[in-house]
Amino acid sequence: MLTLLVACFSQMDIIFHARILDLPEENTRQQDLERQTQAFLGSVIQSILPVVAKAGLRLISGLLGLLLERSDIISITQTRVCGHTFHHLPPADGWPFP
Image (cartoon, rainbow, N blue to C red):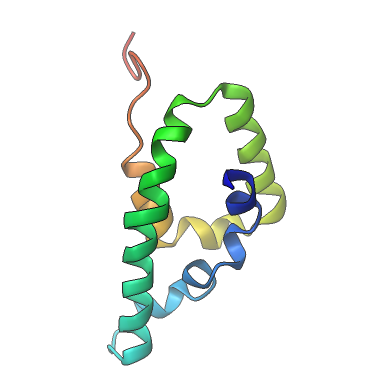
């Protein structure tokens, strides 16, 4: 499931339509996308973070390579999902300090 999520990440509605959330005027489409984004962050991302935190470097490296190969990284990094995910990863043992 994790590999499929990474491989298809940029195709998900909450990523593909993320720029709608940055529009100054609020509308029903924007509110719906905000609810979908929060649901994704609260359910899918929260359940995957513990798996990623315990995964080996080889798996993480492979997933990162897959993400870089199949996605538009610039548009992904500008989404709320990306910002939320990387700010909530648990630190590795002793990282950033030995």
